[in-house]
Length: 174
Image (cartoon, rainbow, N blue to C red; front, side, top):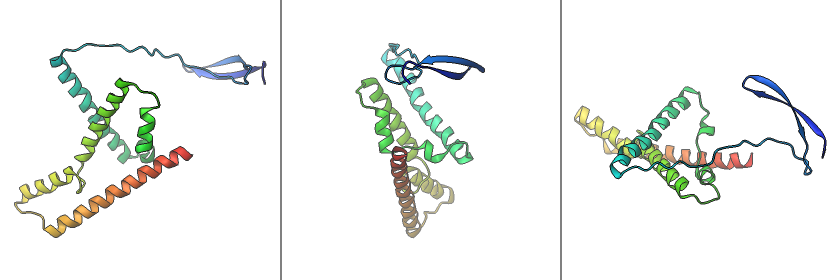
């Protein structure tokens, strides 16, 4: 109720604190976090920027590899760990920021590059897998086998896309 004092118990650094907060005129009580929103600009020469950019880009790939491992070990929930077009649009946000935009575009590009190299028959990683088989065994897989493998790969990709899009919709509704 407006003007009254509400008692809150908050855990901070492992200790319980009793806080008394007055309810505002609009009937709200709450906390705000103070963040330092200042950007720090570091200027690099062109030659300095190449190894730094490369390191940051491939760090995204290594993080994705670790995340896949955690998903397969059951440490991360798959449906909570993936997002589709709706989730990506939400990440971009409603205000324009050049730095944020290009960081996300770079991040998404590296993720797509990584995903493309997975050994799924319809992707480049699948072609690498079949070419490796041919190099090791000295014989090419049959055309019928390649056709079936491509169909299975496309089916898996389509099912994954449908799941991710409906997962995004489900997250929005609930």
